[in-house]
Amino acid sequence: MKKFRGVIFDLDGTLLDTLDDLADAMNSVLQKHGFPIHAVASYKLFIGHGLRNLVKNALPDTNRDDTTIDKCLEEMKKTYSQHWANKTHIYEGIGELLDELSRMNIKLGVLSNKADNFTKLMVKHFLGKWHFEAVFGEREGMPRKPDPQGAIEISNIMRINPNEIIYVGDSGSDMLTAANAGMFGVGVLWGFRDKQELIENGAKATVSHPLEIIALMLK
Image (cartoon, rainbow, N blue to C red; front, side, top):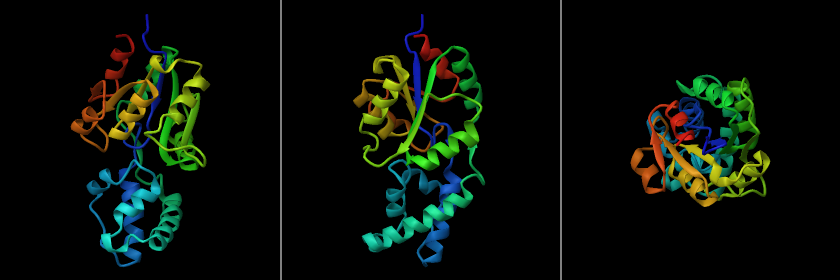
């Protein structure tokens, strides 16, 4: 008998490797303003708390006033909207995982701190072959993760109790979201953050390959 009946996924660093496109877009904006650019790997620490925070973190310490952030944020949105699919791809093993979960009649959802329009667009483009009960990004009037409201909303749409849902993500924020929502937090080790951050923030399990999640469904 299955212990879990639903899975909610984070997007960036969990289902999709979006790092290069985000880094390229932000570095392009920084370069335009004469600010130092960052190595792609540095963006692993900038991503996960919404686009505004990414922009703020990428700017030099001395240029983080609201006016500069707002201007660079608008430019980042425009640049990223034109280049979000250049290098982004599904992580190895994710397709097989989604196939197997679908075969098992597990309900699927996506909850991201990425802007809602980008989240929906990217899920449709890269993951359109699979059915998701709900796909939500950052929306007006809905607090971002680790607040549990978005996760609880998806559990209501799924008509599944939170304690029967696995929440899968790559960051401490995702693990806190799972804990706050009463879900089983699973941290992925192929994403943007390390195992220590996941464990410290309450991961109930960590996995190094997507198909390891299948075994957790039956525990």
